[in-house]
Amino acid sequence: MKLTEKQIEEIADNLDCGMRCFYNLKTGEIKTILNFDSWIGADEGLWEEESKEIDDNWGDYFEFCGLDSHESFQIMADFAESVEDNSLQNKLINALNKRKPFQNFKWQIDNSGVFRQQWFDYKKMRYIHWIKEQIDLNNKKFEKHRFR
Image 1: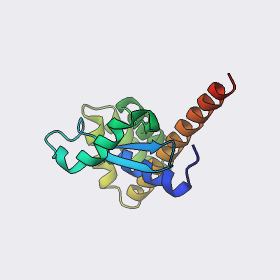
Image 2 (image 1 turned 90 degrees about the vertical axis):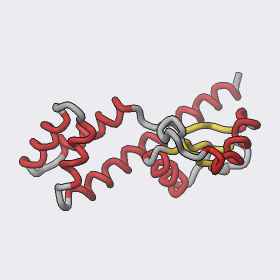
Image 3 (image 1 turned 30 degrees about the vertical axis):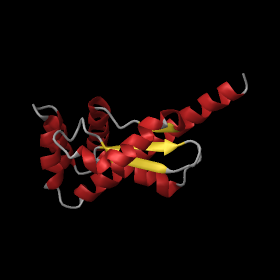
Image 4 (image 1 turned 135 degrees about the vertical axis):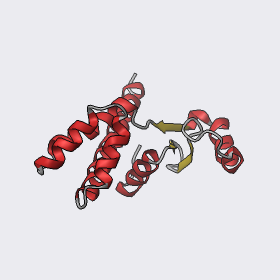
């Protein structure tokens, strides 16, 4: 798989928004559909054509995995540790140690002024890294099978 930085960024953004992203191994095309597990009650008809194409040609596609809740939590914790403002750092760490850590972290970030954009940039950078890891693993797997 060879993806451009722009394609990798697009996949990262879509996964972060709760979408499912697929890369066509033959054409290099990216298809994105709604993750119906995350969006209960969404109109699946709007995504019917793309879903059918992927289902009918499943072997031609590589699906990028989004982050699970544990990985997302770790990114929030890593960001909190990296914040240089001690007051905000303490608020974020406390938020992560309470019930509903995702909701509490989001509230703290949304009310943190300039740090809000830093959070979005940090999270995007980590998502991009996550996508590149998946590309590397898939390419290594492909090379291993090719030389057997």
